[in-house]
Image (cartoon, rainbow, N blue to C red; front, top):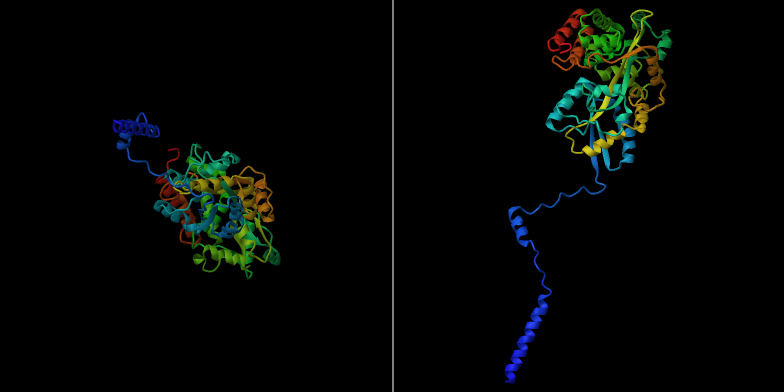
Length: 449
């Protein structure tokens, strides 16, 4: 009896222990079945991508045709940016000017182009944007620091989208060796007749009158045709007439411009047909040639290299008393490769380019490149100020092949390179060059179309 009672008590105690232990067991969620079903239908979520570590370095590559500016970018401009943004490294990787367009297009098509693209004005860069290679910069902070005129060279035709940050304009003219002029008693020529007389006097001396060759072709057009031509076709009046169809390259002002280039031939270096751009630069900076047809962009290149006084004069006018015209060309800007893997860092660099700091740095570290921003900049270089002073004396225009007229094939810009060189080489007459240019333009361009 006692044994049976003891067994009963032990059984009751065991039940109490189990019941107390059961209070520590968690109940399943009320919707456990629903969650289980969802888990069966969907795969487990992947681990989130690892965020870049704080302070991780990013490298931006700048594509450019300005190989002359490599040292300035490496020693001045890039260090100023990297001092503020130490996690962004910038590399300036230029291509020779005549090769830039072709090399850049090849890289963009292959997906190997840099993050930041130096933009030529108007048609060439517009085509890159239309092809999807340049990103819109409409929402980039700082773009309000540029006027509509400044941005117009890097916008769609309707002005709705801007795709490059304007950097600078350049002014065409003639640099000369003041020491040689003083030695020979020469003065700056104001008219074409005076210019030719100076060339003849130099031809009779030990010096080469004009430092220019035609091997690379582009100098013949850029530093020849587009330099002196505005005085013949009256700047914007003639340029806009070509676009509207009211003017043609066969008109007398263009024939006269080619004729003037042909008249330079006897005063060029011996074997000028084989003289390349760097060769012509050397002839001038070494003091062997007296006059260099060029523009303000050469100031920063030449000043460290020369041991003589250098100055400049604007393109001589055809006749005394004529209004003078200068090519004050919206020349250079910077855009973002639409496929850059470093878009955020690239936009940071472009935003920095819209600031007063960059405008001052670029204008004064690269004298002769005049900022297109609205910031008030004091130009420090004397020769750069001389070029700027021509704006007060002359009417301004841009190169007449850059807007609208170089969108087809044959490409007007490239044809001007080729035919300007051929005229100077004596292989094509001025009249035939003008006719060939117009024929090529007529083959694809319909004014107002």
